[in-house]
Image (cartoon, rainbow over all chains, first blue to last red):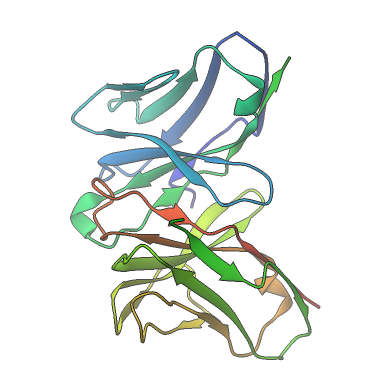
Length: 114
Length: 115
């Protein structure tokens, strides 16, 4: 049973436009959410995170929005750049479990066209 | 350079032949973990270790063993590999199990094929 879902396997946007990547979760115990970015032949790298006590977190061109009632989060990239082309994984954590375990979505492949 | 190093990067083996994938980190991290990535399933945790000599099962531990004899090393052992263990494996580490204060740092992955 997939507790974290990224329903769009791929997304293509034009350079300079906004990229919106979506993620849904089912477990109400999740209270911390992260986005990781992965280039081919490399491991995932941490991008941005958000705690369940917030509804928005911004870091430069990257903003993550959290809608707890809908159990939905999204990553906005503005403006998108060709170097942003990668696979993006959404991940969730139950901090109270103290296991450090992250539950990942399936990933969304973003292509930013010049 | 701070990093998590996995070896080998690519491995092709046959069913039943024991193998070990090594993982080493140079960041003095207490927490280490192994994940496998499969198409349509994302990354799933195999095992984790809170500190030296402390390990525990993740979501998909069957067919795997780990050990944590030293802080920096966390090898993944497949005693009798089977084709369903063909996957992309990632080792990761962080300061602690507290994701809020210490995001996971991942290695570059080991692609394993079991025939």
